[in-house]
Image (cartoon, rainbow, N blue to C red; front, side, top):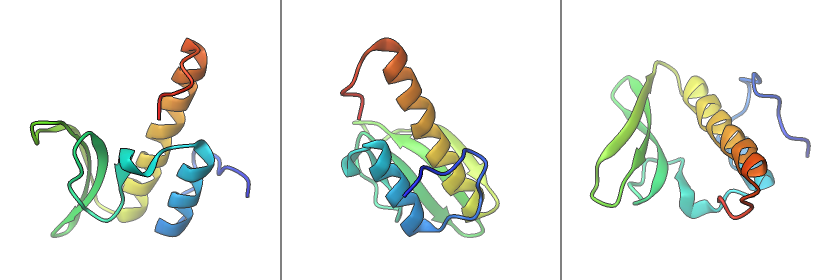
Length: 97
């Protein structure tokens, strides 16, 4: 499978997980089903909005972004990890995930 380009908005949750796997992102670093896992990026649906945030070790929701559609939120999660991967390569830190 080829990594999706950053503006591809047609992926579903299964495809997002596949893309994160291809990036080498450890599953403990994210939750795509709303589970509130500490020290990870959370994709969370509440009523008619989708939230993406980092859940810190104290349970704080940091850097929260709100989206109207699940597709927008999934795309944001993918791009977040793509950018993190780029930063890892630039800083020569290969164990970022």
